Length: 338
Ligand code: NAD
Ligand code: ISE
Image 1 (cartoon, rainbow, N blue to C red):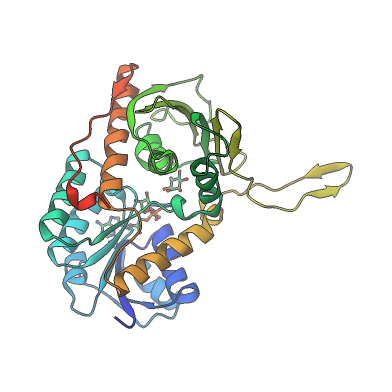
Image 2 (cartoon, rainbow, N blue to C red):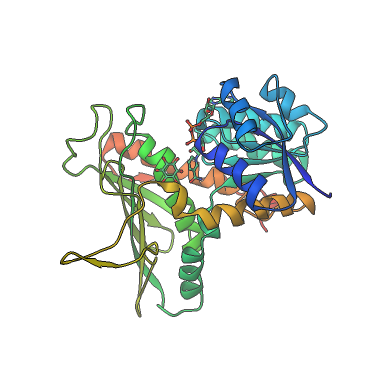
């Protein structure tokens, strides 16, 4: 395939980011069709990036348009499953932002539909395995530098969230990245989870318990503690330290100049997620474009989306019960044993 023609559904923050990178940074793709419930927004983005594209009548029209080779689903999480299933039914490659779906049963439906079709079509927007920091960590774990892994200490902090963000979203929208990347990093599976609620910040609104501390146990006995704090006020920070028998490997700080001025040493912290993994998003989307082009996707698959959702589901149960909850997983179809 020469140029991959992309149709994109959901032109919010990340939809626009992916349009910018496809049209200005990456190669081999062009955006040809857009759909958003907010048509003005889609038209504005076409104008802003001078796209040679049209606004589709509906998401379904866009998916079935013969001039669209691949679909991006970047609308709200609850809308993903229907669009991904429609794309699979149309035999189209589909890049779906995380989460693959907001329920485990929808993820199972997607997995079943892809397996029935017999050809891999779905890539999930877990970009952290493309990040050089995480890749370095994995290399040090896999080459035995720190010996057998025993523990992980991680944190996912956002400066603030809007008033539609609720306690469950700390898991399904935010922690979901750690649920995917830690499984990949450790090459291990989660077997049980617990969620603890420390003293809550006074900044969070009434429907959000913030921060939360999630404790994950893996099959090999590793324990990972992950802080999710989405109103930390001071910035956007992702931390991950893996402790082994012989040492520790940790993600580097996001590079920023160290400023000495006025009797102080200071360093700026990012205030949102867009720049923190900007290079990883570029590599992720280029990999998807290349995969569509040669008919072989390589990035996180629907099974990874399912595993993250199943672990998130156990976390949601643990939020309510306060107990250690098991993670239950269906048996992996041979289709995903690659
Ligand atoms: P957003 O609210 O900025 O944008 C969502 C857009 O989807 C809006 O323009 C809305 O009008 C549109 N929309 C909603 N329902 C729709 C429907 N049924 N059909 C078509 N359009 C619809 O949200 P966002 O921050 O861009 O997040 C979108 C998705 O991307 C979410 O699933 C989110 O979890 C994910 N995301 C991933 C990352 C990442 O780091 N990988 C970062 C941000 C967002
Ligand atoms: C957002 O949707 C993302 O995916 C970001 O990567 C994450 O850090 C943030 O918490 C989410 O809301």
